[in-house]
Every structure is written in C-alpha cells, then in structure tokens.
Amino acid sequence: MTSKNEEDVQRTLENARLARLGERMVFVAHIVTEQFRQTHAARGATDLIDAIEREGWLLGHLSESDFPVPHMTCIFRRHDW
Image 1 (cartoon, rainbow, N blue to C red):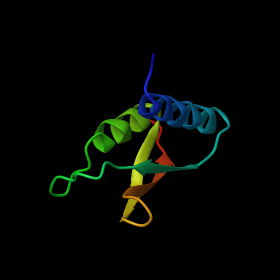
Image 2: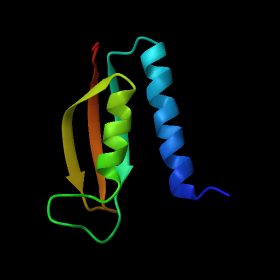
Image 3: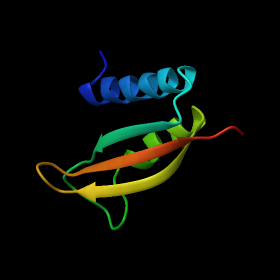
Image 4: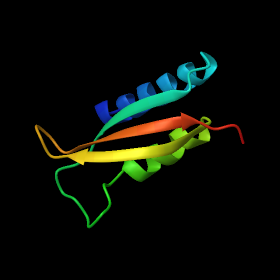
C-alpha cells in the first residue's frame, strides 16, 4: 500500500507530465513540507523538484510559507534540453 505522501508525489509528477504534453509554458507546484525543517532544506522537497525537472521543467522561482502549514510554491518553466 502506498502512503498519502507517495500518492501526492505521483499526482504532482503526472500533472507535470500532462502540462508538458499540453504544451504549457509554466507549471506551478505547491509542495507541503514536513514540520521538522533542516536549515534551508525541506526534507523530500528536493527530490520532488528534481523529479519535476526530469519531466522537462526548470525551477524558475520558489517561495515558502508557514501558514497554515509549511509549504513551498514552485514555479517551473518549460525547458527543452
């Protein structure tokens, strides 16, 4: 059985694929980060950003918020390797 977090990751990656296939130029991902935070790193977020970039996107902007839960808003631009 997969965890809710794994399902969320797979859903985000599928949305990134669909946006790319739909020839979108921008993809926005909201990444909920864990409560415990390391200095300047959110556990698991770097792996998800890397996976989205492998789908053909390049991270252009990232903002963080702690309200109502810790999360990042990532704006990706289409990237043709």
